[in-house]
Image (cartoon, rainbow, N blue to C red; front, side, top):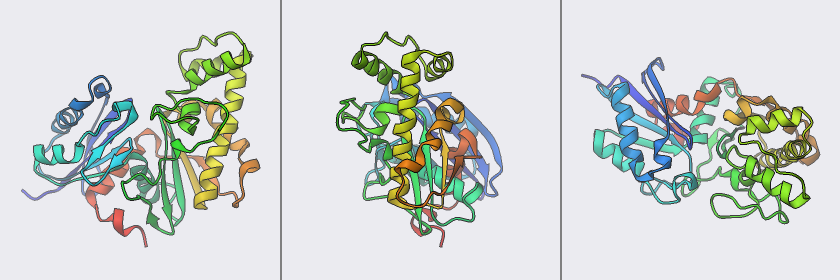
Length: 310
């Protein structure tokens, strides 16, 4: 039987998505599960393999994987802080199990490829996708070329250092990284940090959604946190725009897509931090499946990573 199907995999810190599509891009089956490897990182390849079998491996010619980073492309490993900071050889393990090629990229590279091919980026050679989810990351296309870097990590913008005074520790071990302040996993700890620093009562919120609700209700520390994050996010996005000079910035990730209180204020603060001309900037229209859609495109045409769009 000819290879007429591909598999796409989106490995996130919170969820894993897997889909099977034909070569025309029609998704035949898709599943989404919680990432149980958070508690036991070495099981990740076997967990993903089980999900691939569930969507169907027969007739599949390639697997595209978009994963949280950092990556180590030399041996097909991912080394995310959320999975213990130890290498997990996802690419070679999946190739051993299924005996077909596996193409591993950072999740945001997968996303920006989807944006370019399927979304608002079709008419642009310079575009950036930024995700706000458990972590913060970006995928970047400059002059039609996909930026990857020596290890596949040319887009780890969540680890830009945005403050040298507030010693807020990132899960990677560094201090004052963008992700340490405003990611989905860090915004509540950051609220506690500010409560201590300003000698204010503890917030009490356990989730970002609860924090935004308290801010709308007039809670002082919640309002301070949301206002501070709006500025930090604007500085981070502006730094990306100043570095890569895109014509288009699209924003995704569950934190931004599901919470207008998080997303809208940061765009209102952008201009004060920019040196490059303001690009178009708005939420992606491809939703929470953008990484998965990009992974499927890479599985269909893996040469796109090196070839780009020129």
